[in-house]
Length: 318
Image (cartoon, rainbow, N blue to C red; front, side, top):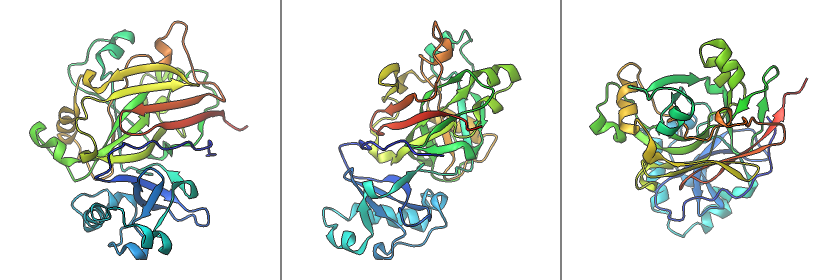
């Protein structure tokens, strides 16, 4: 997909742990993984000057138990302000000189939770769920901050959903709630774009949720030690500058430990898997009159401390 002109990433002000990004250089199509430093610099984990163990793509960098991830974390922690030699060698480059991909460009699984904010369930006219409502998106509909969201032919009711994304960092099978956060690598913004006419006509949600480009994420992934309390984060959505969703993760019906325990009871969660935890009130189809995404609309998802995920919508060619 095409790119929307990039704006500043706006990372958290405190910088102690990893803010993971995936990116390409203008002169190469090779996908790289690295860390955002001070908001406008990117450390390339794969550059020989960094001296880190080789990893086979973003999923291996996401494995908290793996040598590449652990070495990268130690390396970033030890950098301090001494980055001059790494910049000269090309291991640290300006953010403006790279093209961001999604933090996890191709998750093994994209697992979504429906009706996980009490007010959203009420505005949808649905009962509060007694257990998590689980559905999925195809992993190849994940796109990056700045990518275009393509409105599919045949749909006139494409909707937005600002969501708090949780990325798994170690293999989790039958995990208890008390230990669940130990399996989390970090967090990112997500937009669960949804073709409502497809979704409601089909009787199940896969097509309406999984059209091409329907899962923007990013611009970076903040590791858990960047976020003091994941259940006290403001969640906002803006369309063309107008705020349409404004809530907090303290309104989640099922928090992160409950979701991981529930999911890992029937499917093994793996490093790089993405859990999109649900959307708060204010979605387009529930408004009177409804608000649906139109070509040229600019969408912004902002979860507190995770920067701003910005994408423009375009009509499908042909």
